[in-house]
Figure 1 (tube, rainbow, N blue to C red):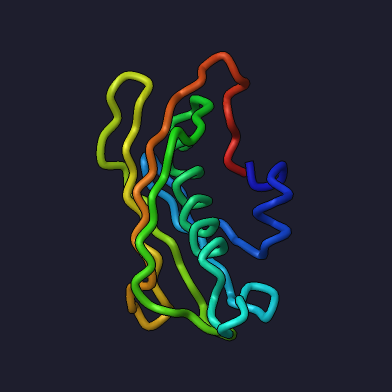
Figure 2 (cartoon, one colour):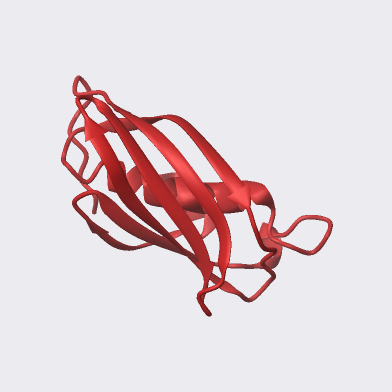
Length: 130
């Protein structure tokens, strides 16, 4: 998935770790990621969390897509900060999944909380996470 996702690579998001029902992604905040207030644009925070969510929900070897997601922005992040998003599976029932993602700074401060809902689409080719 990493090699085929031009959007993730283009944004500078990196896959740090992945395992059954979990994943971690990271982003070093650059000038291109900030808004007019000089803080990370919420779209990039959502994107970072969504990327971790995507890898976590596809970690079972069945193609899975998002059916929805919500984010709460809790702290501003600035240029030069290292951000990490950690996704954890909370429920997997039939083809539906529920995942929580926490975005933190390198110092461990919580920046955002994301909740994603997934739906397995087994008619698509099975994902490979490398």
